Image 1 (tube, rainbow, N blue to C red):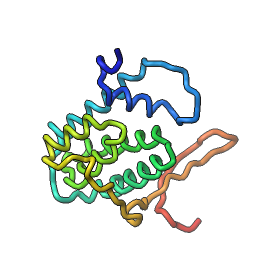
Image 2 (cartoon, helix red, strand yellow; image 1 turned 135 degrees about the vertical axis):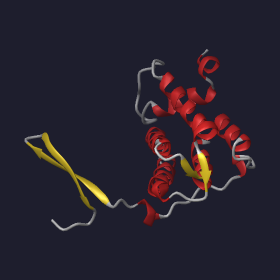
Image 3 (cartoon, rainbow, N blue to C red; image 1 turned 180 degrees about the vertical axis):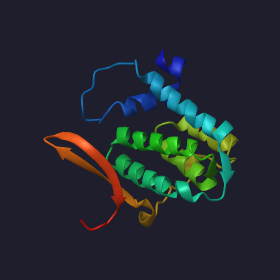
Length: 172
């Protein structure tokens, strides 16, 4: 019934997002709508929002971080955190509009193991590519995953009192 109402991809995404595979989780379908909304956002990004370009430096770090995290999380069966990182990437894309074709292609490959129907459809109809099943897994550049700033949290007696950002690697 849930597959008929929400689709197989949304159901699979929801199942993988519920938490670590080894952890027992109470069965609940009240949050499946969130998975469906995320997939709707992905679909709209590709079909209505994104302007495909060759390069956009402002998305470079988040893309490479996403490829790195999703790759490592899949290898360690941490699907929930991989999906969370993909959601962060999509949110960043909605702030930009001009999205490199390579990032759009790479993202579909990353999402494909969890949502094969949607990703193959977008890959074929929007990007006009050969099936993802024959595509090479995306690479990331470790140099491009580094962040320039870090958030420092000031905590007193277990309570957060302040937060501020400083340059990464700065001396104390």
